[in-house]
Length: 400
Image (cartoon, rainbow, N blue to C red; front, side):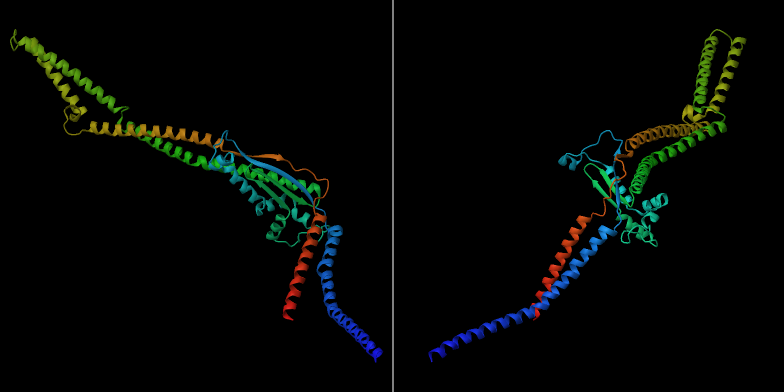
């Protein structure tokens, strides 16, 4: 009995061990499809794309060469003030050169520049050549928008607002062509800056020149009016003529007073019919007649404040014309001074392109960056696959 009892526990242990092994095998067989799927997904989502990318970058991708250039937009100002921000940062205010730099940055990716470069260097033919790999090639049927998008990937720009330095890098499939593109871009940019400077100068002088033209027309009209007045009135200076007439009348009146005094003195010693006294009376009458005629010519209003006459109206009109001429001369002189000042200010505000980095011919291809691209792609594929697998199995576990 004892031996039979001892055999029974050992047989039970064997049965339990076999049962555990069977359960383990069942569990392993249940997880085997999951592991296989995980491995297949890794090969499909990570390994295969990485191998294809490695083959493309090492065997297929066309080398791209880069040419770099740098410049800054400078002004003619000899000194510039420091604004509030400049007082805090210690940097002088750059004024409108900063806005000009942003205009140039926008121009470097503009359709106008791309079309000008295409006309000059035939970019489409180079970028769509048959020896360029398919992924780097521009389609021969590309529209202007497609060409502009392609160009934006072939040019890189940097701008430092503190110093105003702009640097750009262009890419092409030969080092010489890349340098030619960079030189052409630099030349076109210089033309743009010159046009901006000329336009700013033109706008600054436009109002001053219009004011000079306006005041010159006004002065010409005033001089024409004076000339027409003198021609119609047959008098160079009516005021001077009137003054001369008044002076002559005053002289005649003085002579008349002298003659009347002599007549009064002779009446005391001579008879009224005396020949000398009669001669003095005739002389006095002649003087009075001349005085009356002169007074009638000059106008009673000039002499005794009576009603207006033709001479008075002539003098008033002439004085108005002279005042208008004087004001027109002063306004014209002021407009000329303003134009000269505006011209000096515009000269100080001119812009020019200061090139500090000229494009050179590259000796080795800079793009594509194989190791960096493969590393970034491998990391992205692995991270994406891991996150996707984790999310997939987490959702499946929650559902089951």
